[in-house]
Length: 319
Image 1 (cartoon, one colour):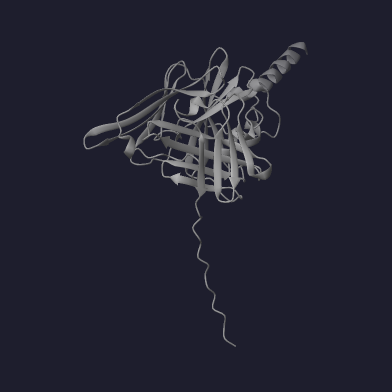
Image 2 (cartoon, rainbow, N blue to C red):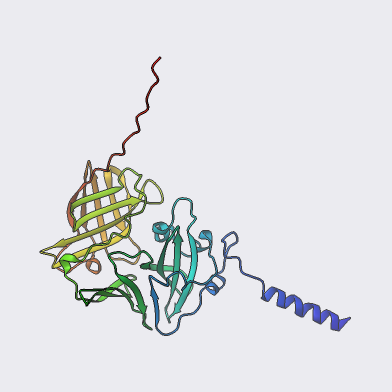
């Protein structure tokens, strides 16, 4: 009977070892279990708008599973209220002090690749959107990642037999934020369109909408996770576009139309004031990572009127 007992124990061991991990989030996940969903990335890595979907692993991660390791505030931009976005792991870059998790979010036909930085215990530190599969202006877009890692975000197109390109390199720094470390472009700044990354998100809540000074100086506000939280994107260009600032984030609404952007790991603090049709922004912390050194987040914007939708007239029958 003993040999049979040993065989039974061995088979039981194999069954337990090969048992699939549930990534739905219906059961709690350990960090070492969650991380197994991510193929390891070693050396250089390239992902383009044309192959962004194919780069992901076949494993699906549930929203409730991802939320165990990434806070709602970092996920809000990629989910509708129904939470039907498909989440798939692309890969993991393991460094001595942190991990970089590349994840694809697909909703309808739009796929967005985002990198999330965690410590070695898988505690969330920061994130940055890298790429989507939605082309704009005839550009080919791609992200190349080296060993450091530096995330080089590229766009290029051929116009009049000339390659036009813009490249920006980002790294995660000791301050706990992504920092722009290199830029290179041969495009005319006046012809380079500003892309609003939250443009298509819902704008149903009271403060949501477009606050504009002109086409190169504006504040976009979109619905957050509840009536007191909003997503925003602000872009400004001052001194003939020699000093540019840009920031995407979330602010929390307080009393009296006051709100504040305050993100863990980011020394930048911005106060917002909403009065009537006007929004005022005022920089309080050190926001040098999001703007030029000679200009600040300090301006007022007027809210644009939403286009009216025509109501269909109904003919009342004459009695």
